[in-house]
Amino acid sequence: MLLSATGLSLGYGTETVAEDVAFNLALGDVLAVVGHNGSGKSTLIKTLLGTLPPLAGTLNWPIGRPPTIAYLGQRTEFDSRFPIRVRDIAAMGAWPNLGFLGRIDSECRARIGCALERTGTAEIADMPLHKLSAGQLQRALFARTMVQDAPLILLDEPFTAVDQTTEAALLTLIDHWAAEGRTIILVLHDLSAVLQHCSSALLLGDGRALFGAPKETLTPDNLVVHRYLSQSQAAWIEDMYSQSKADDV
Image (tube, rainbow, N blue to C red; front, side):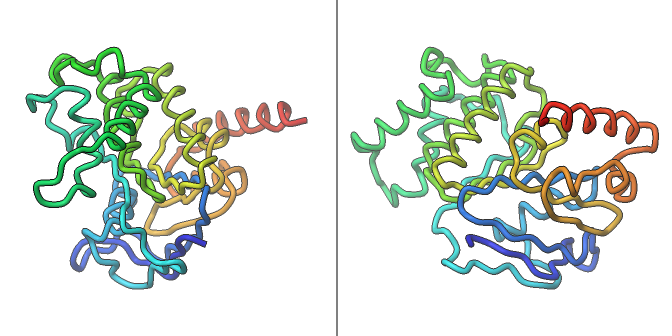
């Protein structure tokens, strides 16, 4: 077990946005965090990072808190006008381990090169940041995340404004990270991607939380109760789940 949460309350100051949050994650697990705007998704990510304290409850790290936790925030947290190249973005992933006046050695350069290749950004490695498309920028940020070489990876809405081809490629990278034994927590809105790529789901909404296997947790009824979907939207999801069950047969 890498991490578990018990009776966790999330919020800012005296404002609670979600109560009684509980989940457990082992190495190699992929947890999707799903919820309506304001339900506490990003608040959970910040609590796991340690930038926000839990209002109640506990986070347990049975084998110890990882010395490095990789984090990829929402695109609004990144200034695309910053004058750097794609390879510089990837190299930023090595900074936490370099120390004061540290230098990138040959092993680290090889890791950066591998990250650029695996994210499909090697051919644009010298392209400046302001010339990148949304998909190219996200691939570069995934390369930075990969260079961090962390056992726990937190991704806050990593597919916003990217095309379906880029999303599919990045989901494949997440599958590979999980196969390597890394634990991934990602805020996600694409329910079909959750069903296909995630081993568990945490549904937040209306101040509550529900954790479990995706197909058992993200049922149409639960999505309505947690104010993620309307009744009419839930009917469409029911059809999607029925098709998913038929494909499994």
